[in-house]
Length: 255
Image (cartoon, one colour):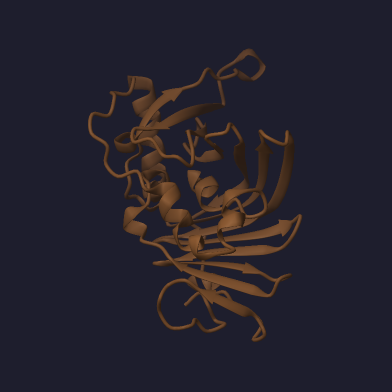
């Protein structure tokens, strides 16, 4: 896939900014604020090699209706010089459906369904619901849906790759710097499989240098993921914090 930069921008559940954000009213803008990099003007031209790879990545996700993968998230904190690792499963389906199922070190679930995002903490018996305008998200997320164009919002260069056993490179890291500076992150790195054009790893670098890296494992595409899997059924005694300004959601939250 993700963050996915998607992935990193969407979910840092056990390891940083998003975890803090979902505990209050800011939960409703975690996605929007992290991804709002509206059409900057004067984007620098890409080298032919970088443009060809970016075009392949965009094309791959334009043709991808759904995907599933395991993930490993490593959040390296600059200030405390510690690293926290989380693992789980991610499921994606067009248009604009995502489910992040964190398994370790603690269970948490995040669901993006249309114009809402749901964060469920079973240990705290808490469901947080917030509105999200997917039309305002960055291309670093919407390219997964075949919409946003990475080159319109980021200056993109290729980092030197490491040849495998002295031969050709198997992957290429694209370093993406937002054309419109964002106070929440400095750069996004996408590690791309040169054979398939899939994103194997996404790393978001925070302003303080902390790094939120998510690797995608055993990624499967176009398997016919059922939309019913994005319904978030929670126990009736779950506390609901609704920041959408609308009616209180039912326990069948992913509808």
